[in-house]
Length: 212
Ligand code: PRP
Ligand code: URA
Image: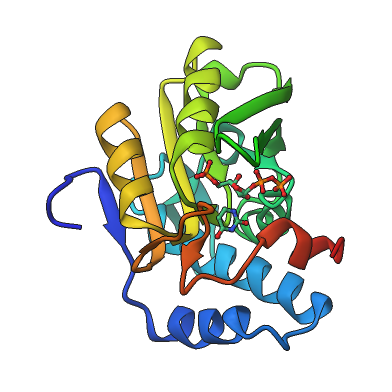
């Protein structure tokens, strides 16, 4: 979305391929879970171009050289429960030692307003870059409130990653939190009257955990 300087929409052929399988109503829970994880890994690579590096001295078989490594302890992963949980392992593949916090949100089925029911974050989170993850960005209410919850606890650097987003939700998060980087793998058309993304993939939490 060129309109918002803090929004990055990936146009990655591998993600397109995987998202097309995710959308299919006949895709099994097992495959759905695996795909969410794989897409999260690709998105993490794509979104970490500005991640902090520290110089390290490395001895090759031939000589000593100065190289750079990611400052892994500077990263935390925070999934928005429930569906965000599906992306955690995917981000962990890139940052294996990252601490994990959890923010519990559910949408009221009638008002579509988010309700926070849980928040537990790692010690020192205020000093870390937080990868806030949720496969779905619909009205944007859950993401906006989760970002506010992180900011209240002092977090300054937030990267929000969503696999499928509606334009309405992207606009809401981008304008409410212009200081947050928003990474979206796929922009969909719109929301339906029940607040579901079209064409979307249905209820990500239910498909991930087989609850319906
Ligand atoms: C889904 C999804 C997001 C939220 C997006 O969660 O995982 O958190 O909806 O909608 P929004 O942008 O309109 O706020 P849901 O509320 O269904 O909870 P669940 O993951 O526990 O099923
Ligand atoms: N949450 C989902 O899981 N799917 C949608 O389409 C919208 C919100």
